[in-house]
Image 1 (tube, chains in turn orange, cyan):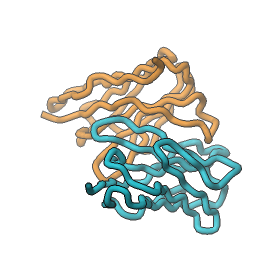
Image 2 (image 1 turned 180 degrees about the horizontal axis):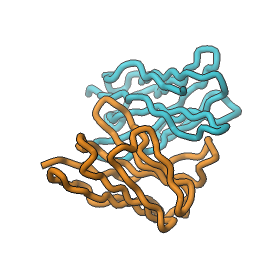
Image 3 (image 1 turned 30 degrees about the vertical axis):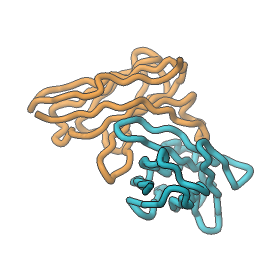
Length: 115
Length: 114
């Protein structure tokens, strides 16, 4: 079955630690996205990638970093500079970026908690 | 800047009653509009979307939405609520033409009372 997988389902971060969230898709989509979800806040865009080896900052990129070395993979690193990392993180993909009508498909999410 | 307003962070309906979830957007150009549903601790699933053409859009699970340009609205409805409809619903908008980002509303949590 085609889809998006995210791992782990739950992740715990200690003070000063960097952690990496995995996102893999087998939909052959060019565009991938990372969102952060906080209760009552909706989804906010962290980073997006239109194509391999390219990525752009979204609305709340501070304290996060990404890479896009392979079409199917778009890992997100939450760095120690992100002072309030506790949230639900969602990865998404779409066929192309520059097609506004294209549907974004979402993974199951990773919940990040701070110890 | 594009924005989406969902009226009511929490809506409760009785099983079998009409479901109405409200969404208004700000726009000076034609929008593309989406409704997503999220069950607890899961990702988002597309219910329906409006791009061009017919303004009444039918989606999965018996939901539909009508694009009303004059009211800048895209309200989601279902004639008869089912217990399995209990979830959080998000309206989202994008405009294309240089800005392809999806902007999400803050969500409406739907409770269905037996």
